[in-house]
Image (cartoon, rainbow, N blue to C red; front, top):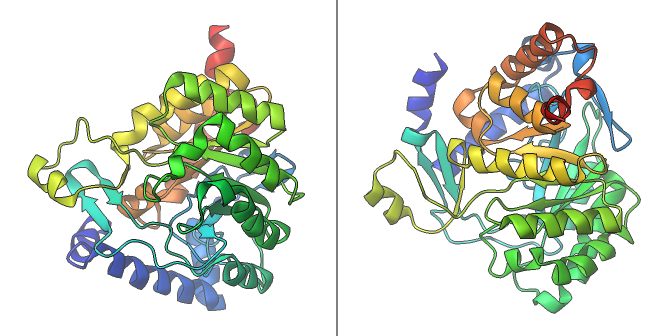
Length: 359
């Protein structure tokens, strides 16, 4: 039934249907009877899935990745949708319109998306006001912060610190996004010499856990360098990975992909590299940092593989688009069964178990 509905929704331009569906979700969760119904249908309250990660209690491991709820307008909705947590943003210190439309594209043959949104958002102050007005927090909320486009790189640290100061006290954790391909020069901030002062500025500004989000397109040496820096500075963890600028191995029509042009590719095409990065990070710093795995997770088996590879938490966005409302329940119920079938008493016991077995 959802596949049929998806075909209908795909007749509407991607960004427009996003706004329509998001508005419907917010309305449904704002009305107590429908909210209660959604909780019964979508939320998995299995205690085996609960975990405490960097001091925060997560009722379930699969969260909503940044990009869907850019302005924190749905911060109270995601728990009822079955997510164990959510990241709002990416938020920048100053409001900005983002890149010109069209800027969001579907690749149905690959169950993928390409976006070049460009951090369109209403600014950190507006998002902070919404977080402050939350009435019924049900799951942890992270604030994903990025660089304002017009800010020069030499002022990036102060720009990130402004967002952190506004959002940090109202969020459960902060994620420093230096890996979107859609803001010119942003990925250059992943270089250690640029990243160190930026992360230090955020750490000095907030008291909540701070994580950094990296790109799948980094070289292995650069991944190691960022991981070592994260440990050196005392970050809580790393979110791996963002979207990719690569286009290899797509089933979609080559001419159509070329016509779409630049942007970050998400969904199954990034899954293999995202898993590779996760394994590398865990082997290097897994006992010192929390790893959040995002990129191409669609199935229970994939989610279970990420847990065993070292992820304490998971995130999805494209999988939610193509999987529908029951996707989170399906993943969480499947993970609970995997844990019991393999003799684990908790999710935390299974994290990194592939590495332990090989050792």
